[in-house]
Length: 138
View (cartoon, helix red, strand yellow):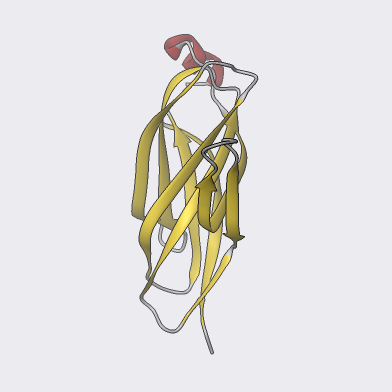
C-alpha cells in the first residue's frame, strides 16, 4: 500500500521524523515545556559483554494530525533481533507543529559488540532510526 492509499484509509498522513537522539537523560522543564538532552552519545564502551545500560531516546516528529500509535524498537543490527521496545500513543492537533517523544528505557541489554538500532514506527510505518555502537574496553 502506498502513502496516498494509507492516508485515504486512515484519514492521516504519515508523520515525518526530523530528529532522533540517544542520551543519558532527557528532562522536560515543567515551566517552559522545553526538553533538555543530557549526555547525547552514539558509542558505548563496556568492560565485558553482555552488559546493560539505561538510555533515553528523544524523537521529534512533524506533519502529524490526529491520534497515532508509536513503537520504538531496540534492535541488534547484526542479527535483526528485537531486544526491547516501548509503545504508546500521541495526539497532534496541528499538522504544521511538532511532537516530541521522550522515552526513558530501563537498562537495555548490550549482548555483543556492534550496532544497536532504535527504530521509530508510527501506525505500523517505519519513519527512521538512530543507533549506538558498542565496543569492549581494552
